[in-house]
Length: 402
Image (tube, rainbow, N blue to C red):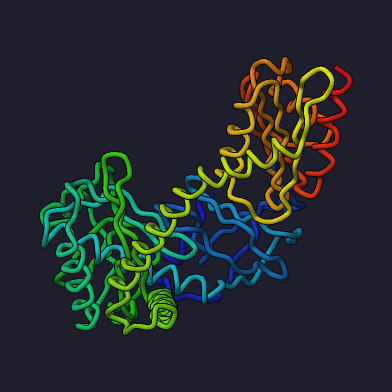
């Protein structure tokens, strides 16, 4: 028996009466659940880019709603008795989805009507929604133009109507995107703006969308993905964006409209300072390597092992320079650890006769971590940074046993 879809004709129905036709344990669920079939429902199933409704069937909480052809499957968290039952829709979630979906119809219509950019897909997310446009990259003028045109229709407070007809009838009326399905179709008409076959839930008037905010546009394969939000989401996002702008202006000690230029100057200064620091790392490493070599005399076999842990936050690039400089000295082995980050560098002069890659892997196998390299230079990172001193001690012991 086909489930009657109450939301087709009244998307604003919050409560409904129905008859439970079946209730069976649901398969492939991560928690105990039951699959309920009703003779009619106001709960919308996941379909067409719009997520499913939540709500209740009797005392059972609705976890999922699925379109199974003629029937609608309701996945609930407890068993429901056969017979008459009362159901309700999570109204906050439903209204939010209607704002986003009706806004999508309107935004897609504006992109196509004003700029010839057709929509090929739609996704209603938990925070923002997206449409994919098949076209060359939309300019900022096009994105803003579509947003302004959509908001004008919202402010006009136009009716949003449900219409029924065949694909041929809708084609004659100027449907935005023709479909190939046969029989009677359901379409959503935004008066004077859009006509599009759709089985989703929608508002009654455009003013209920509140406002529409286009955020950004990114390349996705051959299409351009436009991110947008409507209604309460747009209000919340706009407010959060302003707070971020205000904090940035306060940190940069500038006016709101000066933030981009001030941020650009800050980045340029940071890059210049970073370059200065990098230019100093090599000579500093050379000087410290000379002192370290003087402080550690060779062993009777001529080999010199320099082991050092850096407790402070040492730049990993400096560790590399320091190790490389030490390894230039005959028969010298450098075992270095940067304790805050758990970095390890094992390096040697080729005449030292050990294998730094094998040594590092032995240490990491016992203490945990990842890394690798060559016979003369290996770099790794401990899973637990605090074990840096232990790693150096273990490295020395393994070298002594060879």
